[in-house]
Length: 351
Image (cartoon, rainbow, N blue to C red; front, top):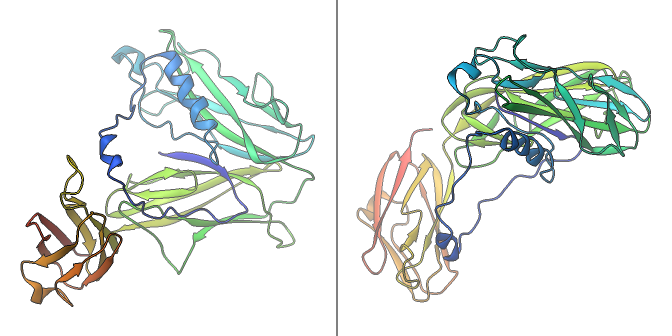
């Protein structure tokens, strides 16, 4: 399961599609680390995720690259509940357990779980996982739990602990669609949800710290409070926390759909070594819109192989920055060329 922690109380940011400059291509490809082979790398993963701006949790769900015999001893450490909010001076027991690769608790051949606060000026933690609020913080403090196998491999998980000035009664926690009745995110785009905490007087509690995780197929990847669409399907998003000693959670179905908006950037031959289009192959759901933008130094045009199939058909983009949009109501393949004959294609897929 993918997990991330963050604080609630403000609207999540929705990332808009970025305009890629030609210099973007000079930086590709970029490698991303997906496995961890040493103790230091594992700890740096936990610490690095914990200190990312705006997000104080870590997904940490890829198996550590262990030898087969060691994977049977220790695979991961997981908090039972990965977020908590305490009052100033208040305490809360956090519990993390070491797990084998089959999901069972690793009871032998593993060190005791160690707990470390990354900011003891705001949150302290005892060796057995009792956190205490020292200073008010709504952004939260990362508390790292780690365990080490007999082979010397360390794995870790991160919880986020917030501190409020006074204790509140904690009645409910709900995760809701940001718009409408269904929570949706498009492939290749970020989505957002609305998390609401209420006290016993049905007054909303702002600034509580929660953890997000997936309890279904990995059709999305979590970046803080923002799910990023990976593949068509429906998964379950879980939000959990311990608020002033009371544990609450809620689950929301999250539907991943095809994108309804895409952009094609037309470069022509203006930049040596840069393809004539950014998004030479573009996917959009039926009824979706594609925006074409001239980012070259010369006038350009877009000519479809079958312009009668495209509402409003062909068009010209005479100046740098000029744009034109076309909507594609029917499923199909729509091939086009620029003024130099460079080909591109738009695939319109079922929703």
